[in-house]
Length: 369
Image (cartoon, rainbow, N blue to C red; front, side, top):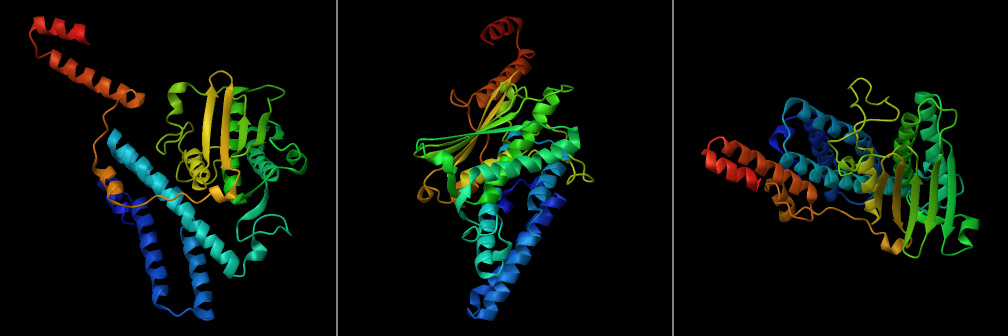
């Protein structure tokens, strides 16, 4: 809530952002009441029901905040500094949201009598929403089938799936690679990546009898478990790669307010950045490698050892608040996008000055540029 107040004023004035802020204020007021209450069974029961109500209230936070950013883009010019501030804020905001929902889900499942509604097959020994024996291939197939259903609806066809498993322990692939993980987090990442791959394959190979399959390789090493999803969807130009994890960028048309929840294979462009946050929440990551004219490899990294997969949380302090007030950083060789932007700005300034200088100086300046 304190960090929301640091956002650019133009964004804070957007109706959707105000709505999200009101939700957080209301939820904070409701939850803080329990600080002074005695821990009786009645209080604990009421606490669980309040958590469920709060979780339901915040179900549409991602879409509503995304709508607020769209409202800003439609009504104001967004410069590079404001875009950086929004990117920085949303990464931290959505990561905090993942953590809060993880805590709420865990508490309500363990203490709210909801264990019978826990995700996954019956008989699995879940600890709240955590599966100590999460079957990765099973989650892959589940995410693929649901993405395929949408793809079939939208394009009337879909690419097949091939799964390969490998491990430094030769016996493991025979039993299937398993991990201590939250299946819903892994499903979310895979579902988003499958949607992107399927859309790319279907549009790149339009009007063919047989679409190239999507190949998923599951590999377990000593430190990491890697899921590599490879498609033949034509890839992307290198110039767009740095934008793929930005919240204010999407390769798909932006949804209208009327069909925001019905567009099957595209949306606000938040799928990739939020999926990467799910991976990073337990010290993993998502990395993309694309070859324009061929296809894209998306790799999900997860920690093989559960004791190394502690939650990663943003910390609110003075350095965080300074970021929102800082100007655009000076570029150097390590950040070529900023170098390019800075050099373009310098050239533009020099060109403006050029018209105010004597002819002899203009010629010298042209040589320098």
